[in-house]
Image: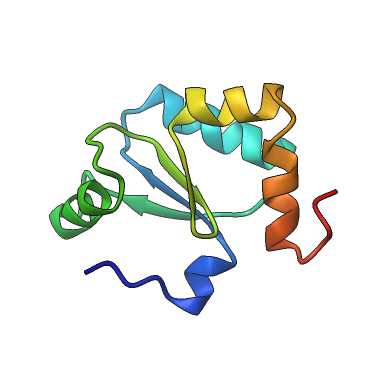
Length: 99
């Protein structure tokens, strides 16, 4: 059973590894948006890798969560951004009206 804590509901979580150019790109994009995140390194924590796989049903990194919403990987995040749907998702973390 996956239990999301109250803190996780209000933060961005990136599952990543040390040698991952898409992880770097995702973090750079979030930084450009003025965002902070909690990074979970699956390459140094096997339990975190298992948790990520159970939570996302994916094995690749990065895997990005905005609050409880699984965004997916870097390409998924950029597709949401291009569609105008990523910024409203970020607004939900900040308690703003996403409209």
